Length: 286
Image 1: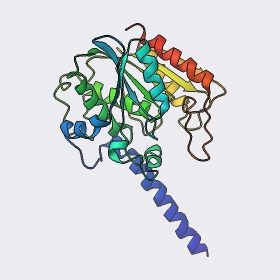
Image 2: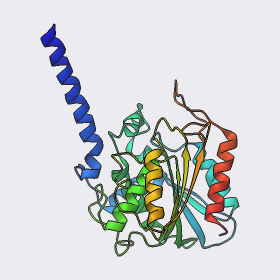
Image 3: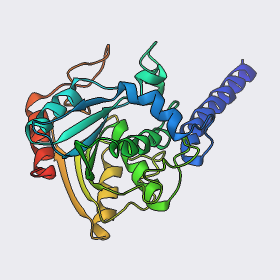
Image 4: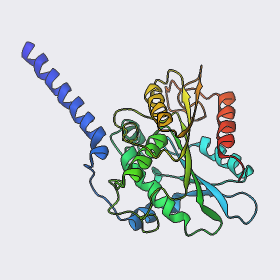
């Protein structure tokens, strides 16, 4: 029995270690199957959801990046609010084109075992490049809006773009942004992002010339807000334009109506409206 218990304990430790290493694989560059920008564009472009305001434009644009369970109605709602305020938006679906919305595979994304933030950052690069082909879009006025896992992705992209480090799912930068992967980006809004140990953006230098708005949850049981507060403090020390809002008495995913079975997360309409208002105030007039 003792030998069985010891052997079982070793197996558990080895499994935990394997999961931890796998969670860091994107950050470490151990990613299989990198693709050309054209291949990734062909994969994700058909699933992009564009919402345009009235008028010919060109309009400033927000890239909307969902949480780890894929696009939900929270981003559809935000896209409508943005359009009413004169901003175009494109919802970047990283899940559906890769089959990650099937058979509960999104749960592995949430666990950091598939498509972590460093890997998913390739989709931001490809989407930024696609803006140059749309005359109704002002590619010099771009804001990244990341929700949870999308916030992780956003911070990792910004860290890699500052360092000139290629996202590991890409074989090369898209030609349109190769000279400057940060070109046109004015700032970012981060809804309860993950800033934990597997996040490159949580520890690597971020571009201090951008504006940052953190919308965090006090006592966030899913992503944890303390690491994000540390990131915000570091940016403030570098004289970046940073604002932090800490919502109390709500859960991670407070703006998402759809919940998975037995989810402890709760939709909070009042906080959702407050977060949308904060986002629009951050963006300012078109």
